[in-house]
Length: 290
Image (cartoon, rainbow, N blue to C red; front, top):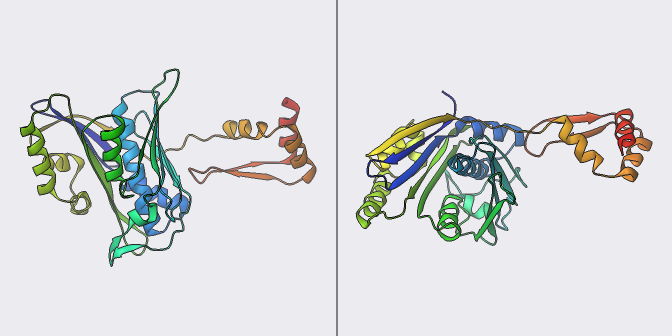
């Protein structure tokens, strides 16, 4: 089975949760961006977080953009999810050299940095998008997402994200979870959830053992009741028509310069490996539309 998100709620109704497998999503991202292990791990965590958060919005035509700028050598990261959880993204420096805390443990926090902000843009198909920002806590992304929910949306949240990348650049496991407390949750529920998170251990370990999203949710909170399962994938919505619109926005003078140069223009998408080609004649046709 491919990647998917499973949503669940606790039997007492106080805990809302979602978990996902993201192996194929992260593999596709690494293939597109030719990223090194540290960059792949960081981008994979960002894609997983954005996918979970986008799915939890439950706005069919909406979208969610997760931006992270931490001042580290990785540069900025942008991940975009649609209303289902299909996701795309990129990092500014995918060729980042290997960074490890110790042998075998990638240092995503140092790569991302902590001198910056995490920003979430929610397009809920209303007049204006909702934009929330918080300062980065650790650069490890999961902790930063947890802090974002607590500070910007006042929702007690536990987020765990994991990507296992081998030295041969292959992605062996990827996924994560979000647990959120609903209003009125008593202290006993909070204590039980915290104990479950500690007992279950790091999500990367659970993923590497082949545990499914359902099994991960139950390992943390045994009384979770599964609600729905949604297939998700790495999906870019770029198109030739959209690129044409971007070229037109350059203006008459710049388009005329391109025509005079007499060379085919190549426009690549930041999010995927699509390469759109426009001949001088096609650019001249666009120029006539202005």
